[in-house]
Image (cartoon, rainbow, N blue to C red; front, side):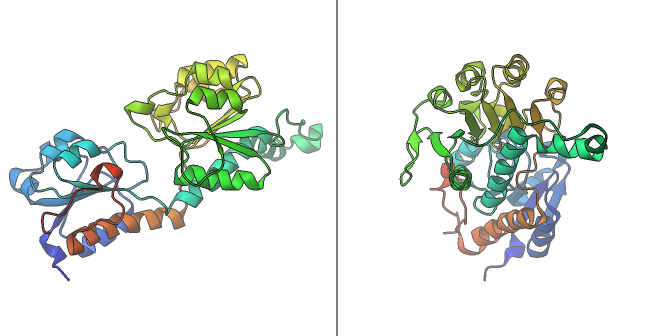
Length: 325
């Protein structure tokens, strides 16, 4: 077993405590408040071989660390890490897929149900004593019955959501950059085309420049007045001003959102809307799943420095090899 104590790991900003504890037990560890090279002296920058992080790691920060070999990202989404630049430098980037798939899919289905059946509002009605004082909660205008589901981003999580909603007896369609092998769901080669074909659009799309505000007014208009939009992917994929307008004027019926463009700041205009169900980015937020994600961050670091291989390399760095071997 190679000596892991020869490899210093940098933790910029906050990281899951379980990951921090395991990293500190296995490696020499350096912690700084944020990913800012100004917080490190030349000797410290030269000593860093790996990063464990759940924050932005940009090209300038990568370039400031001449002996960096691996960036282990906490989360399946890694748009905060400049993976293309890392790849150009021969630096491995990993994320934490699979271990959060089922939890996020569960949350997506719960968010959809809450949105169409108004379950949080119904509970608030009961807790406020209104059931006893005023009678039953009003019948909901929307239902899951008979809905057609469109999934934008049919990766691991998207497929897990699809399997759950198939069990509800609902039809599934999807849009990706390309068809997904091994699935029978109807494929649409444009997002607007998918929205036109369904009345319920669930976004599981990653962030980044290619998807910036891709869910805009044209897509929402295509979804239609009975449309329900759910976002469990990245807030940056949605034009939030257009979504507010669409919810206000009846372009779509309702939306359920777990992610936002400028977290944790949620636009007041969204918060004020009665037909918006909002969650504070809790898709994977259970003790069980976050601990599993933390373990995978550390397991990637240990595997890299002990065997020269990463467990869950992101596509951009799949061909990166260890300088040791």
